[in-house]
Amino acid sequence: MRKLGIAFVLGLVAVVSAVQTPAQSAVPVTLIKAGRLLDPRTGNVLAPAAVLIESSRIKEVGAPAQVQAKAPTGVKMIDLGSATLLPGLIDGHTHLLLDVVVPPEAQSSRLYNGDFAPALLLAIVESPIKRAFLGSQLAREDLESGFTTVRNLGHSGIDGDVTLRDAINAGRVPGPRILASGRKITSLGSYLQSLNPALAEPILRQEFHEVASIEEGRRAVDENLFYDVDVIKVTLDDDGIGINTPIMSAIVEEAHRAHKKVAAHAAGKVAIQIAIDAGADSIEHGNDVTDNQLRTMHDKGIFFDVTPTFWSGFFSKITEPSIVLSTASRADLAASDERRRQKVANFVQRILKSEVKFAAGSDMCWFYPGKTRGQASVGRFPTLHQAGMPSLDVIRAITTNAAEMLGWQDRVGAIEPGKFADIVAVAGDPIADITEIGRVRFVMKDGQVVRNDVVSH
Image 1 (cartoon, rainbow, N blue to C red):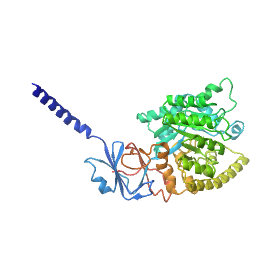
Image 2 (cartoon, rainbow, N blue to C red; image 1 turned 120 degrees about the vertical axis):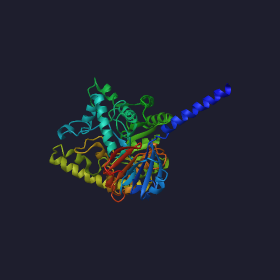
Image 3 (cartoon, one colour; image 1 turned 90 degrees about the vertical axis):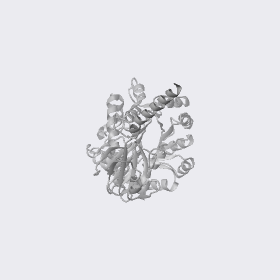
Image 4 (cartoon, rainbow, N blue to C red; image 1 turned 60 degrees about the vertical axis):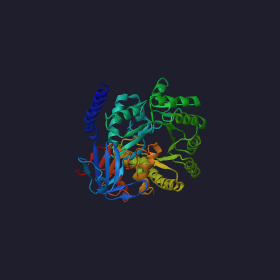
């Protein structure tokens, strides 16, 4: 009887295994063929190229004949002709739940931070559900332009970017992978001043953690961790007042204890030095960085996240279609654009010479008439090339380098076996013409085709 029982169990296992085998072999497999594949890390180009994808991961990369020989029968074929394959793009610094419309000149001139603050206040005080739907739209537009991963650094309410991240991960809405930061940690009055005293605190609490001591800094990190953020964002004032080095050091220590990176908004020299001394993982903007600070960042392995948001006359471009500017303001903008052009050329050369690790982010939170959010964001990166950065370095800044800055180099940023099947394609050669990255014609995320403007077979 015992032998019969064992035989019955073994037979049952065999039957179940036979039933399960077809389901197990039903993992979707896709083969992409293209004229070229660029590896940003090495700069090497594989031509022609093929990528074998199993479910959401890349399984094989190589010459078409070699890869196709390893593909199972019935593989789904996508032939992109002469297109160039690139890893999915990464925006290292964005704001998907904010869409600032620049107000008329007369209104801006009467307010503190007048170009930015009115739209920020509206975003804070209006319905968070309305804001979430806006974020969903902007996330979809980013994905359609080739961004398969973004790091959202604040201006999302208490948990807006976390919730959007989770909805995308669950497949409820389309969008890129999101590293969410929750509320920015700031000092009092960094973005808004002189609000109604009876309402100021509850309004600001919807958007920021305002801290003035070591204990408050640690508490702000812990509150963001409660909402399951991926990264901590801190805004440091250029004059060094507010969040000083001891407070920032406590924030970094608390975040690192939870294995979270810290991104520091730091434009001026004093703010940059505080971020460096406290051990921040990345410095955002860094407009006035010195050569000594670049060397220290290099030695400490601190990432420089360059944000060319307002390069190449961006502010003029977003205001001209909808705002009537005075003659004086137009002249001021033109002069400012020229000064910035000269300054950023030197800025880029110093960054390259220092060999500091760098990535790039759009810092996009602005409404650009006639463009989607994705189009507005991707259009910022060719300006790095205009300022003197080689095309390959620009591409690295939004692929391999950005993946390392995020701590996700094991999953995104390159078309390599084992990584997520996040792939984009452009018609031409982005090394010869960096503006090709603004004309993405094919987008795949997680092995799923998001967009295909190329004939496929």
